Amino acid sequence: MDKIQINIKDVLNTVSMTDIEALKSEADNGLAKLVDGTGLGSDFLGWVKLPTSTPEILLDDINNTAKHLRDNCDAVVCIGIGGSYLGAKAVVEALGNAMGETKGPRILFAGQNIGEDYLYELQEYLKGKRFGIIVISKSGTTTEPAIAFRLLKEQLEKQVGRDEAGKLIVAITDARKGALRTLSTTEGYKTYVIEDNVGGRFSVLTPVGLLPIAVAGYDIKALIKGACAMEDDTLSGKDNSALLYAMTRNALYRSGKKIEILVNYNPKLHFFGEWWKQLYGESEGKDHKGIFPAAVDNSTDLHSMGQWIQDGERTIFETVISVARQQHQVLIPKDDANLDGLNYLAGKRVDEVNKMAELGTRLAHVDGGVPNLHITLPALEEQYLGQLIYFFEAACGISGYILGVNPFNQPGVEDYKRNMFALLEKPGYETETAAIKNRL
Ligand code: PA5
Figure: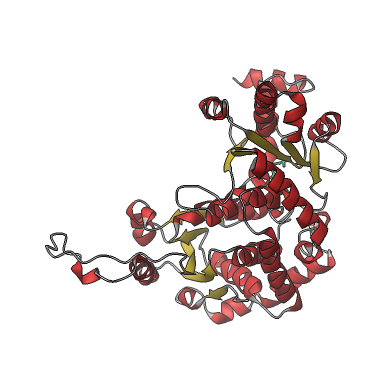
């Protein structure tokens, strides 16, 4: 199997190999903590050996459920927020076609926002359609997906009847606790469990990500196989990419580079950037520390953020994901009139032009004082995405430990919820409601 590759030579204008190597023992310690569970947040390390411990029987069961939904639905709505949606969305978009079509039914997402128009228009779209629901919430109590599920469950039951609806709803949640578990047991839904020791943003390789990806028609066994290869090689020390990435980004951070921009040159990777932002933002942004994760889609963003990146405040570095092999070939045609002056490109593949845009940008940004890390993905295929996911997860854990935070909690996310519940006068929040009203 080809492997993803990382190249750090274009950061050496900013930090030296000595600066990076100085973090080697911290990185080794970080990896050891992930393996032996002696670091902060060690209750949430279920993802570390998850790929190699995923039973074949679970993958077969997920594939069977996916087939049932594919055979009976024109659209499947995945309801979830944060780690309960971004991984699935990232992989489905990376493997789907440019029009957002998959190999299976249309995959829609809800519960990741509370836009009233979004929900209204989604319900209108689903009117009269055969649709299914995958509702995902580890806690089983998150407000945004709970609202979307209440609405869509009611709609589905009205459209096909309660019994039939029950066969088209799958819930992925905690084994025992939470409102979604109670509801699923009462209604008799097919369920999958998110284990206690796997946090939301590390859950894409559990049923949370695997079921939507399988419904979309993609090969979850190949995805897991790729992740297994990266797990084996990372934990055995055969592949030091995750360590190198963690060390390099921390060396850059210590040198004053506070913002990391994940760059792609393939629009199908847009949501991979969103998944990565959550993984690193929620894992590292603590104790008033942490690299701010941003993402751009090039060439699109070269014409919006390009100026800032080239010439704005020099606190950024970039990590570029380059896809080596495209699935299709498009050649630029010759035009006898050549009024657009493009004949110098005639006969070339579009990807050749894209790769030159990428190289030209990298050289310009490095010259402009923006260190560049470079990750090459052999192709947008399941096995390589599996590798990339595990690579980023492992590097994130190691990087968080180098930074000195608990990479596996997210205490800051609770603050907005407390205010929202107080403002909405949720039962049990009477004191907070009185206090917040006093502030207004
Ligand atoms: O990474 C995380 O833990 C969070 O982003 C959660 O995934 C998100 O808050 C959704 O939580 P839940 O799955 O409990 O609804």
